[in-house]
Length: 373
Image (cartoon, rainbow, N blue to C red; front, side, top):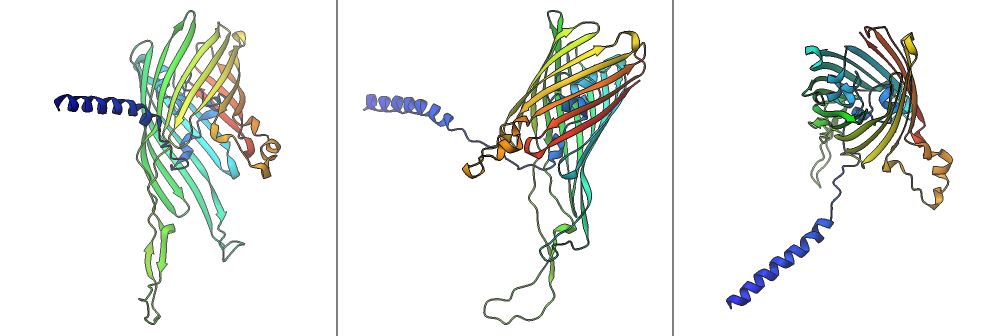
């Protein structure tokens, strides 16, 4: 009997071990597609990052690093301010600005950034008033972030950003808090610089909306069989669900294929995993040229970002839909810039532009300016 029990226990253990891989293979997709609030937090910052398709976290070492990778702020050599804006879909607009200061002889840096997205004074259409009821509504989504970044060695830096988020949708509003954390490792591969980074963005609270737009008047219904008597409606209100923030994980690499005194060519790649859609990747190339002793410099940029969710798969009735709208360009971005720096690097000005295709949704044009002193 004892031998039988021993064999039974061993057999059950082996059976469980054999079943474990089968259970592990039944992975569950926990992606909350379209299930996050304040998705304007993913709209980027500045024309340089836009032209590089978002594959910028490893290279970012200027004011725009406040958004893309807070660890890159510590790599700034002088203070700077940057502004960027572009028209998004359906006549909406997104604008971003940042200000950063190196401290401690370049050992650390602090900065502040703000971004805003929305539109204003749009007419309200209802079933009873299809031509408009005379009122208007607006959307104003805003975030403000404070960043601290530090060099821990000549090859490694890290930074953290705290954000306050305000989300005003018509007559309702909500708010939340989030944290960004980034790292930057920079070294030499032979004579050429190479950089790697890991970034987590928008890790924080959820947002619940409240406001007069949720107020309703409810008429009390009498019990079944009783006569309906005239009575005043009772004030009440809807209760909204809380929504999480669009958390983004970035893993990026940048390598200078050419880096000489007057010319630089950098190859960039990045893998991103958001919590509200499928993972994606992007690759970019940036070419920079210094025009001798004039203080001027030129930059050209190009990239392609692949997002599986952007692949249209129409049925037979719409077979020509994707072809006619040219979705093959979705994710393509191009741009460039003109920069000027005084001798000794005291004052610097950079003007940047980027074009980005959104496939069936058209294209956007980014404009940005950065000043260093």
